[in-house]
Image (cartoon, rainbow, N blue to C red; front, side, top):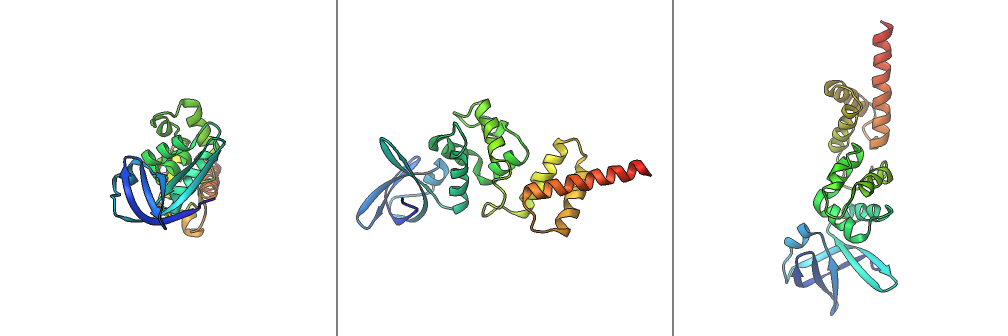
Length: 197
C-alpha cells in the first residue's frame, strides 16, 4: 500500500496530477481546490489513500494529514465511495465537515453533488464523535460547534456560550462530544438551581 509520495508534478489538470517519483509517474486524484493551486514542475509531497478494487487501483492525494483522515472516515460510511468523499472534502473542507457533523446539519452534505438525503443523514450519524481530535481542529472551532449544537437544542446563544466557556476553562483539552456532554450537564444543573430557587 502506498501511504505517501514525494516528487515532481509532470502534468496537472482539474482534479488530478501526474507525480513523478524516481522516474515513475503516478496519477493522483486531488480535490478541485488543491489541483487548481498546483502546476507542472512543482515539487509536491502528498499523503495518499491507496484504494484497491477488483478491477482498478486509484491514488487519492492530500496536502494535509487531517484531510486524509477525514477522507478515510467519509469512505467508511455505507454508500459513500472515494469520489463522493473527495467531492465532500473539496466542497466543505475538514472544518466544514466537523461543523456539519457536530451540529447534525445534513443540509451541508446534501449540497454536494451526488450526496442524497439518506446518505447525508448517514454521514452525520456515522461520523458523530469520530472527527474529534482530527489533526488541525482548533479549540475555537470545537467550542463554536458545541455552542451551535446547544442552540439547536433550544438553549439561548448567551446561555450556551457561557456554559461552554466555563467548561472549556476548567477542562481545556476536552474532545467535542465530551465538551457537549459536560456543557449540557452544566446547563441542566443551572436550570434545576433556578427552579429550586
